[in-house]
Amino acid sequence: MSLASESALSAFGKRLATLLEPGDVVLLSGPLGSGKTSLCRAVLRGLGHCGEVPSPTFTLVQPYDDDGLRLPVWHADLYRLDRPEDVRALAFEEILEDGVLLVEWPEMGDGELPGPALCLSISGTGGDVRELTCLLPAAWEARWERL
Image 1 (cartoon, rainbow, N blue to C red):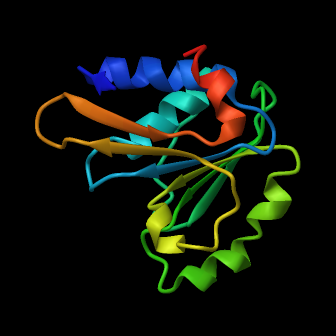
Image 2: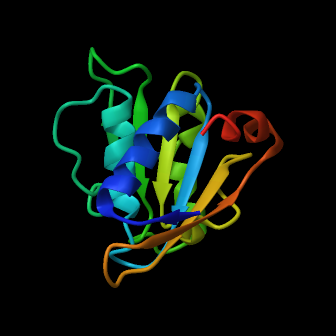
Image 3: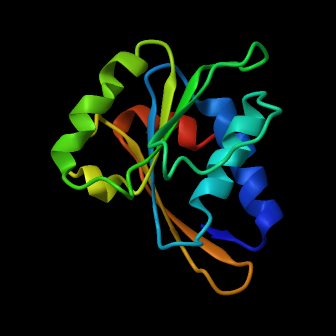
C-alpha cells in the first residue's frame, strides 16, 4: 500500500484505530524516520487521545489510559533493548487483557513478543511517500478488508 503524504499516513492510522480490539498487537518495523511513531500517534488520535505522543525510545513503554480513550494502549519502542529476552520484564501479556500493544522495532524482541500480531513494515525516508507492507494474522483478515 502506498501512502502519498504524512496526512495519508495519519488517515490510515486513524482508520486502523477503528478496527482495534482488546488483545491486539501491532508490530511496526522500518528504518529511523520512516513514520513508525507518526503512525502510532495517528492510531492514538483515532482512539480518542488528545495529548502528546512522544516516542518511548528512552522509557521503552508509554501507557495511555485517558478517560476519552476507547481502549487502553501501550506504546513500546524496543530499539534500546540489549537482548530479546529483556522483553519478558515488560509483561506484555498482562497488558493485553484489556488493551492494545503498539510496538516499534519489534525485531529487537525477536521471539519474545506476544502474538499473533498485525505486522506493518514502513519504508521510505526520503520525501513524503511511504510504502506500507502488511502481514495479516487470520484474526485480522476480515477486519483488514474494512480499511
